[in-house]
Length: 105
Image (cartoon, rainbow, N blue to C red; front, side, top):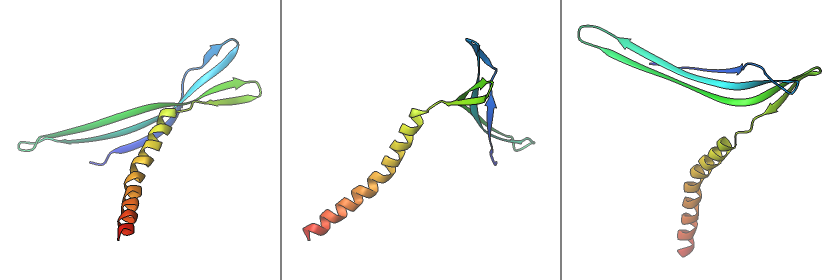
């Protein structure tokens, strides 16, 4: 079973506010997989479907063109920083322990 992965940038319906026109934009990530086997002896049914929608920007339509107002994702940055810290901590502690044991000898 090989999952199908797709990413698509979509825009929502326009929002009219105070004479201005805004349009939301989001990144849609989809992972889909399926497997079906039917028969007298082997009955197998497997399925998976995940969809994540992440808002990316608010597009403002002006007479001179489009202005893009990005939507920050602080949770993503925080989680990436935590992952880097978690991956680097064992290597740093191992190097420190090696130096301490070498200094004792």
